[in-house]
Length: 107
Image (cartoon, rainbow, N blue to C red; front, side, top):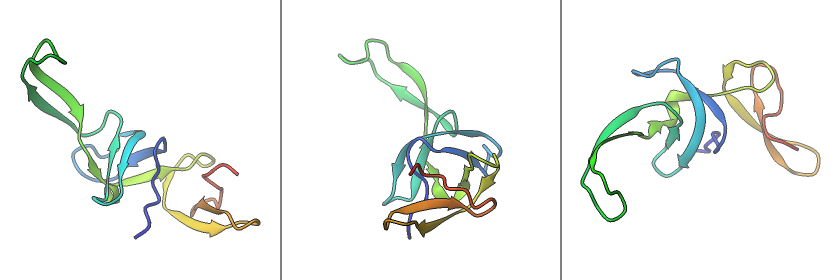
């Protein structure tokens, strides 16, 4: 399976408790099929005080979301849509929006 979501893409969540929220992809885990999206899927983590973190307590951070639950937002039409991969002149492979046929990747 080819993953069509990359770091720094703007995505929207299409299902689950965070449905409708959108944000920038911070990290992609291709082997697990998950992504971390900014300000989406917050979990509370209990931390102990240590040398690195002087004060312990409850910290909120983003947890990974399954890739199947997010869609990339197209730059041109501004709608969440699926992507297809096509080859342009010169043999470069780029992602293309299936709704408006606009290239998502820079040339």
